[in-house]
Amino acid sequence: MGSIAEFFQHLMNGLTLGGIYALIALGYTMVYGILKFINFAHGDILMVGSYIGLFTFDAIRGQTMGPWTVIAFFIAMLAGMLFSAGLGMAIERIAYKPLRRATRLAPLLSAIGVSFILSNMAAWMWGTKSRKLDYPFDNSPIYLKGVSITPHQILILAVVIVMMVALKLFVDRSRIGKAMRATSLDQDTAKLMGIKADKIIAITFAIGSALAATAGFLIALEIKVYPSMGTMTGLKAFVAAVVGGIGNISGAMLGGILLGLLETFGVALLGIPYGLRDTIAFVALIIILLVKPEGLLGKAEKEKV
Amino acid sequence: MMLLETTKLTRAYGGVVAVSQVDFQVREGLITGLIGPNGAGKTTLFNNMTGLDTPTSGKVYFKGADITNRSAHKICRMGIARTFQNIRLFKELSVLENVMVGLHFKTGKSSTTGRVMAAFLSYLKVVDEYELMNESAIKWLEFFQLESLKDELAKNLPYGHQRELEIARALATDPTILFLDEPAAGMNPSETDSLMKTIRRIRDLGITVVLIEHDMKLVMNICDTITVLNYGQNIAQGTPAEIRHNPKVVEAYLGKEET
Image 1 (tube, rainbow over the protein chains, first blue to last red):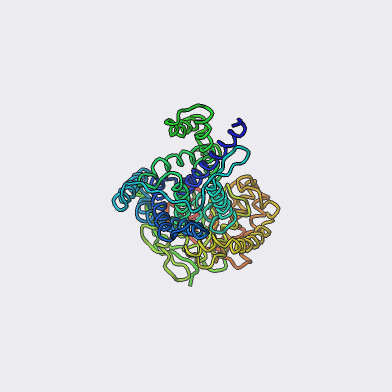
Image 2 (tube, one colour):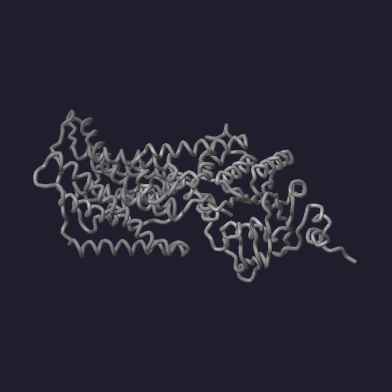
């Protein structure tokens, strides 16, 4: 295998992994942008969404693989998204909203509690055995000048790109998106403009959770679905959000992709042992916090006097 | 009936009584001035009338309805808008977008979560709403001759324009009554002159204006009626001429003459 082909191979793998991180990181960053709070239950919302998607897919896909299984795959993904969106809004309403005027530590602890509740509930209801999502299509790789690309990777990239473009358009160009940005910049003033801040916050949680469910469902094809799957994935996506500049949507996209590339190339080219792969993200976090604590695209906040 | 009034409005922060038993009235169609030395409780009174703060006791009535404990977004939707002493624009949004945010609830029909999801799916509809907001926002920018700056970020505007933009954004919510908190603060005389013209133009649109101001030339020139607060209490109200010669007001500003 030529070294250029090898490079593109890793690039492709890194981009798919990074796209997944980016989708999850968006949820962290959007919620942080509006509430200045890290939703540590985000990874577990992803896990629940993956389970719902997996169950739906198993229920409706039928016996033989064909065009229907692909359609069923997307229906299942949508089911996971919708369920997670509802779950995210419910969690916000029950566990975070009553604490909005409390100290900043209170909702954070509440989030960690919710995270434990969700993963333990999942283990209790669905068992700790990991499950795998069956491929909805033939996943034999396509070879392109020595680079092997699986249809699954193409699927991930396509979904990630569609989601990101849709989100960017929604936030930048729609009425609700504008209200979201206004609320995140100055909640009191946004209310004075007639914006129902509580509703905007609920929508933010719904969108973030739906994106996480999508990511979870996509990784269910590669890694498996199990009750604690959200923990490490969630933490890494959180790192991606911080690296990109927490609160910044483009930053989360950039941070996610960067982290995916870093992990792939770190193992492949820098010779970091595979067992230490998970540490790359956290080393990156430490470096960014030392060098540019506001993140790559973040703006340094000036202390108000 | 008064368009807006407070009855025995009191706001205490612990032991500090910022506003005490204030009866304040706003008559429809007039420009009402609210003056008083620093710390007299003017901004606190504004905050309590616009839903940013809740009175310790007393009531606020708007068009006869009790709005004392309503949330800020509901009060805004009823037709009350305001600006701030220290300008509070959405700094990272463009000039046009700031005004569009003001149009938020006017352009949305029933914004239930379901409708949001529907809008999320049907991009065309979103574009439709956006165009509608765009058009009305431009109209308000034209009112202040800011349309050429529409794509500039709000934080990059010169100070005088930022003040105007904040007023434009408030007007976009289509208010019956507009509260201006020290609109002339930091302005030079020529900017103040043009501000006076603007406030009159706003009144001519049929909008009732209430303003806090320290610039006496502006206050005496454009206000139809003036209320004076001192140490949280309403010490006088009347026409500019009456206020100018009211001994209590003179005392509040200049201190008592030694005898």
